[in-house]
Structure formats: structure tokens, C-alpha cells
Image 1 (cartoon, helix red, strand yellow):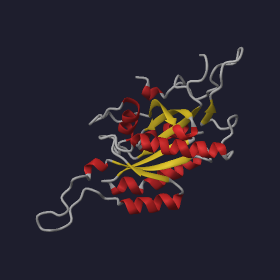
Image 2 (tube, one colour; image 1 turned 90 degrees about the horizontal axis):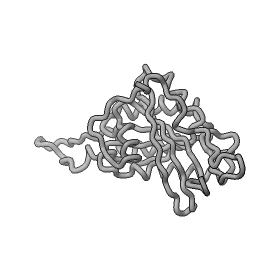
Image 3 (cartoon, rainbow, N blue to C red; image 1 turned 180 degrees about the vertical axis):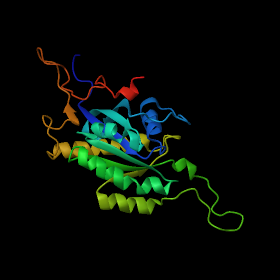
Length: 231
């Protein structure tokens, strides 16, 4: 390949409880479409996307691993956390349990991913809360939302996370979530937090010279996937 198609490859993981919309977020990012009832993720699913960061004049290839949210696949998904530079920590704004469980997911990710990991907390399914009546027939407050923006923002601030609310159905803030995390990773690269030779989740694309491959990447999607995903 002559020249460079992208400047960096960032390894991302998408984690959180089952049914919070992780697969739908990935499909919206990569295919710009919405699946109302996607099949449950068995182990991991993969997708990639080129994003442009205009102020940096950089094109970044995001290699995203959508991980299963059930305990039975935890040992498999943990192996994909290793070396990740970015993480979408997803919960469903209409499910308080999924929000509370993000603490467990975050601890797991931080134990196995790159120590300089950029994590963005994503409150998904806000389309379910839009255009709701403010009160029911008795005058009582009625809402599907179980996690307020203020509470999620406070939690994100306490844990040093980025934060955004999104809708995989409408596409609202889906690309923004990934781009916001990518910008933060680029900033960490500038500050020397990520080393291109030592950080598996961040790889610098290099032009072809002689017998040197055009892209020095170790995150290629052709890597073997768990047996559960090959059927």
C-alpha cells in the first residue's frame, strides 16, 4: 500500500451488562443502521471504523471488540481487555441495575487493560426517555429513566471517566462517544503516556520502506477468535 490510509490504530472494547445495547452501538458506528433485536453476543464480536480528528489532522482506525455481558463468557472477554487503549462502558438509562454494575465492569477492565486506558461512560437508550409525559393520570411523576444525567456525570467525574448519553436507535452521540475517547487517547500520546513500541492498544501506521510492512499493526481482525464465535 502506497502512503498511509490512517495514522493510528486504537484498540477499543465495549463492555457492560447484557442487553444494554453494546452490539447496537457497534453496528450503528460501523454500518449506520439499527437492529431492533440483535442476537446476544457470544464471546466477542468485532467491528472497525475510520474516524477523522480534524483539529489533529489525523485519521484513526478504531478496532472495536464488543464483549458479551454474561458471566459465562467472562473468562473469554477478559482476554480481549488486555492492552485496550479505549473502552466504552455502557449502561441502559432505563435500568438502574445496569448502571450500578458498571462499577464491577470498570474494575475488571482496569485490572486487565492498558494502565493508561481511556474509558467513556455511555448511557444508552435515551430514545426511550424522550417525549415522555411528565406526569401520569394521577399527577405522579412518570418516566422510564432510572439514572439521571447528574448522577452519571458525578460518577464519571469521581472515576475519571468521560461521559455521554446516546441512542443506538437514532444514532445520537454514537460517533461522538468514540471520537471523544479517541481525542483523549491522542492527547495521552502527545503527553507520552502511550509508547508505540510498548502499548499494544495503540499502533502507529508507517509508510512502506523496503521489506517493512506498510502498517506496523498487531491488532488485526484476522487474529483467531474464540471457538464460540466461529460457528
